[in-house]
Image 1 (cartoon, rainbow, N blue to C red):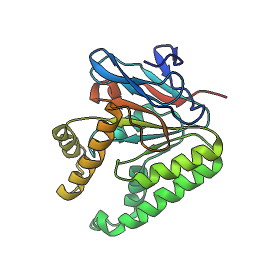
Image 2 (tube, helix red, strand yellow):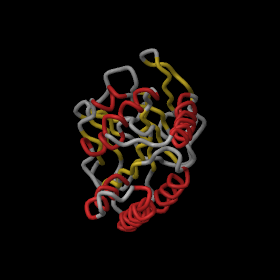
Image 3 (cartoon, one colour):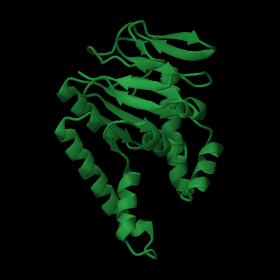
Image 4 (tube, helix red, strand yellow):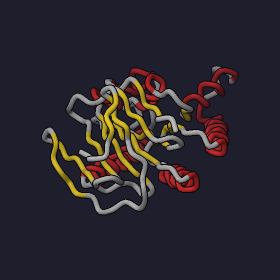
Length: 229
């Protein structure tokens, strides 16, 4: 799909962006849309096929994991990421640990958000590579990460989970947490646009690559990490 990609032990090493992305050309692989650009920006479509067991990014890169609520983002991050990971659910769990049980989450949600973004800011200032949970509607978070990647001279990548809304809703029920119908509709619209753009070879501003995953290909990933310098 991309000529410069390095395959390591059934894993895929995603190349760093060497400069501004050129116009992408759509090709076909295994009956799915794939996109390549020689050596720079790339879309990898791993849906509906046996994918790699590892995704490896460049030293100092940043990775955003997006998808519908209940699509499996937190599960993937907790299971496969071997690097600093920034998931708002971690902040929520910490706050829930010392909040009274009768107190609704909506009451202290702003504190959770502040704690999450403060932790993200500290991680970015440290210069460490990181994997960041994103619901898909927070385009400003991707812009923030893109600016940080440019400052470092590294790249921002997007892992995009594409699952059916019914599957995501079932995932919310399984974990015992859900979002309102209004919020889910907003998420569905934002994630749908990201998926459609990726299928056309259009990357979100500032992203060097997009990897499209479904439940099966995400479940086959054992490691999402970074190559050493």
